[in-house]
Length: 584
Image 1 (cartoon, rainbow, N blue to C red):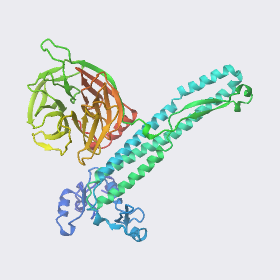
Image 2 (cartoon, helix red, strand yellow):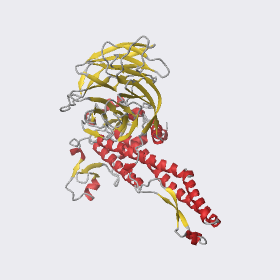
Image 3 (spheres, one colour):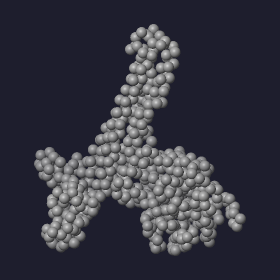
Image 4 (cartoon, rainbow, N blue to C red):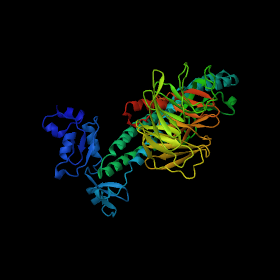
């Protein structure tokens, strides 16, 4: 294998290559600048003179180019020398030459190795900021694309212009025909000029999205690097983030709303018929806009697919009016429905008769695990079920001390149980029955109704708690315990919630509304349903359907996504799936 193939192909263990052994590398020693396999890495650590060497993991897809790019983080952009110092006043990384020349009189320059252990890792903050900027760029990209499409769909605008000219022709003799063609051409030129400027900005914003995605992956991956290189990488990535912010400001500057072609005429046009250049002109009129006024690219709308009235009686079963307290989609698109009043679990499928099983205890909520398996909460009990040949089987159950209300999946082995009317809003329970405290406490909330939902975003694990009595939702970062109180005119008596697409969630509210909320706490939209009081909600695994239940009804809606949403999905399918939310 020649050196060129070596640079392009996957990384190989350099010590093994010396013995002509082709072994893929899994680690990289920053001090030795050497790729190593697991065996050589362990041998590497045995020698005393190599103690303290900084070793990081590398992905199987990495090439020499990725390693070279990683090494540039530790080199000064100006002098191409190793970064060893940091100016704490300017928050600037420095090499020896920078220190001796640029920061010669500065008293705030310190060695990175001396302060790295005191510095608090802040990759999470940089991740959140980068992800937030990406959402802004995606929103801007969608807006610019929509504007471009509107500009190129000239029919409505030109019809208005043509009608105005036709009306004028009736009053200004046939002479107006001489300049009608010119005015229409002017209108087209105006639109063409505007569309070219818009598509240019749209293309720049799309390139910026790609660059931010690469930056986000670098942030997420290289945060594993130990001190002191950790500090250096974070500063270098922060510099790239600032560059992205500046480019975003340039693209979003002087934002204009889609306008219209307007015909402008002189008041005394009848006396100027002989002078067509003075009769009037065509110009493109739009108005200044703000990025905050744009519709978020993650916004969706819903269309009703089918409905089921659960209050209908059957010949062999005299049901009371159902109180649906939990619904969840299975992998095959069927719905698990929890009827608290009648103590039953039903499997709903379009165009089929529901399968119904009675339970001894009162069920509360349900969450789908995988492969036809789901878990149901009862007061003080969590039961695991699976469906085999249209029969329901209990294969495991665990007990807990708190009064269960809601359940959401954290991972394949653990679940977050929400408790209503308790100062402890939620606890973690494993499939083996072990309870774990999430270290969350609420003050003076023991008498108020609340629902909890755990969900994972690209940058954090969050717990959402809805308070029906306070018309608000509390968003808590599970790692940092930072929280945000979300209140909005649309959040009227919020209750059950479910995970939505692209780091969002759906919230059941009063007055027949389902509020679409971002993980940052912004309201994307209030979606109207045909249920006066939506009680519970669930999104299908393929994110194409939304089920809403309440007042004895079950409605299934189609989730209609924007073009920007589809572009986002297509883009992320080409990347690793490590950023996707966990849906079981």
